[in-house]
Length: 92
Image (cartoon, rainbow, N blue to C red; front, side, top):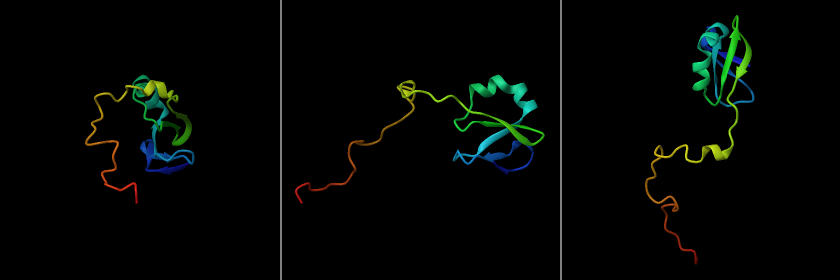
């Protein structure tokens, strides 16, 4: 992993992930563990010890069925979602 930033607050770039991963020292993780797990980002969290990565915490993948209704009242649709907005002649 390549490190960006200094201390235990930088980001690690893992070759298997596109997103930069947030890092945290093991002592801080121990203090805040339960709260962090409740709001864990999809890209996860790298735990460091003496500035070196020792673990990566990532959320468990959820089934697609768990996503049904998850975004109700959070997404607003503008216009006709079945149209490209362009008029075309199928006969030509």
